[in-house]
Image 1: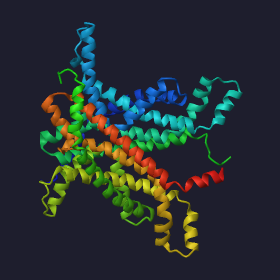
Image 2: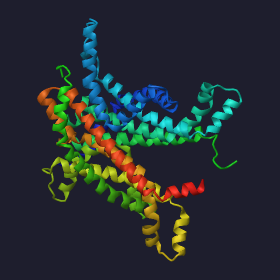
Image 3: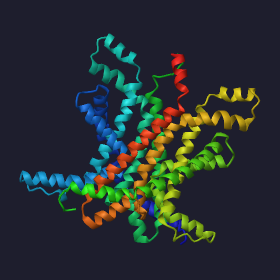
Image 4: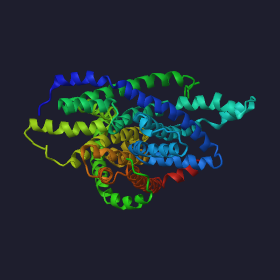
Length: 236
Length: 235
């Protein structure tokens, strides 16, 4: 077994075609997770009756089990549930007409929601209480104070954490290949097994992920500088 | 798929699968210990800026943090035999388990290195100066003063990284390791009850993660016990 350096480039071009799928499987769950995470974080901070218990359980379970479990549970469980409901109400709808990517997206969104809610929570808690009091003192209500004063600061402070989550989920999307999604890892696997050049294909895939990660880090550094411009630390 | 959901099967599956928890924990223990050695070495090379090796470590950490663990697993699985063949060592028949341990050790090493580097930098420089002033040399001050404090600072992050690594071991089955996930796959092949198998696996992983969190929290309280005094004195 020798390494065919030239084939890495061929594989690279072939695998790069799967980049949109990977980005799709990364960005969409993060958007959905953003909304879930924000709602869950607020529920937990304000200790909403009944709901906060559910929210605690949700975050704890999803952070305490591997993400591949979430994908598999949704992938195996949701079709059963849908078919049962469909049979009960006579919809004549079959779960196997649903594309697998939808199950993957659902599972990744739920995982993203759990991880992001912890980031929101720490971000919101890190904003000093004086900010809230100051907002009240000029006549804002809780909703206004939250959306105009606390959340923007919490978000700005959470940018490094968001980047880590983005990179984490970019890498996690590779698990989707196990349920035969054709994203970067899946495409690499296909290129590898059709040409019997496993090492070269996965090197190419590795370079794509590495490049994406470095770009994401660079972008985050730039955004962070802009977003936290208001905060000059100890300097006055 | 296709069979109806039968919750009573979970009661049967959990004991079967838990037999293979040992393999998972074995991967974890081996990769964390090797990763610890690798991580401390890499962190020291970074902190003291040893020429060439420093750049090499930067590249290593960037690569590990820049690629999914699944890709790393495949690269080691297919790449390591190819590289070792150049120096006439044939490991193509080595058990998949060892490839997994090597991959996770490399991965843990990079993460630990970053954590330790941050922790060493977080120790106040006055500590080193104080150590010099009582006559310690470079090595003594690092080993006796800086490192113990750095480990205390690093501990919560190390604990998180270990728990993350435990969850990552669930991917080892992709190269054919018979751990809990691998056994789960064979159970699905035999019984076609996918959902029940994954529910059982989730229960086991969740229980182990909760247990680890509990142990780490107790240990963290223990190594921080002298800190509480400072806090109350300051307040």
